[in-house]
Image 1 (cartoon, helix red, strand yellow):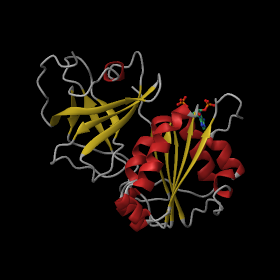
Image 2: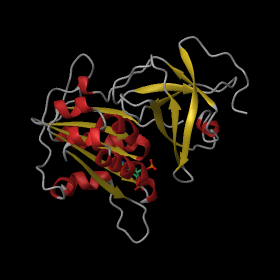
Image 3: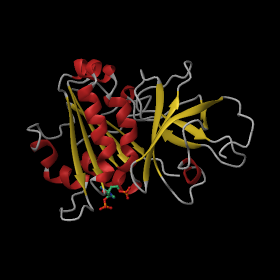
Image 4: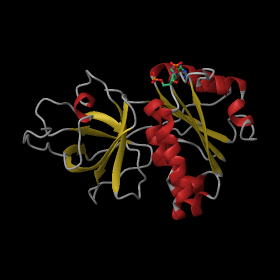
Length: 263
Ligand code: A2P
């Protein structure tokens, strides 16, 4: 059992799992019921744990919309991770602990006003962007939103493709977005396909030419980056060379960055 009756710590909620979906050997997605009092800003992360003694809380980006009835999370399965090694066995009806306080740098408040929002992610780094691209406020602030997402294989892109379908198929979301969301994907280890990292698409400009859109321009574009440590390093070097400056809570900028959390 993933519940040994351990007391729920102060400031945490105990929430039921409503759905679990295993995308591959290494990726899964789960949904929790939402406490009506639980609030967050699109792009933030929360601390998750299990009602099991000795299992630590870990940071997880919230992948669902602020207006959703459920909270969703997208995770890797790490065999030795103190939390994900357990979380991957979750089933509907189990309980997860969630701390009430959320935080994170991938929020629109940390960016100056702009016209195009460009979201750059690899792997589970796409999770906070799912929340952002489903937020009507984001489409009030930006004329268009582009999500550029890189994974090892086509199978790993399922989360992003489902997100794109949801934006298209949900009448309310679609009426706000009105064709202003675009998804660009790339893979690096798909058999029979050339390996193209997200950084390759940035260097050669193919991500924007494929959309018939202009190149990155720090005067009008705002960028958010979320991926592995190595991806962040290479991507921020590139966009800083283009004149982008990092934003913070106290000093908004033209880009923000956060490492995708891995247990
Ligand atoms: P690659 O297959 O060439 O390592 P992971 O599953 O290891 O987190 O990787 C997710 C994706 O991020 C993979 O496609 C991986 O490519 C890519 N990636 C890894 N390092 C970098 C980097 N420094 N810059 C851009 N993409 C990267």
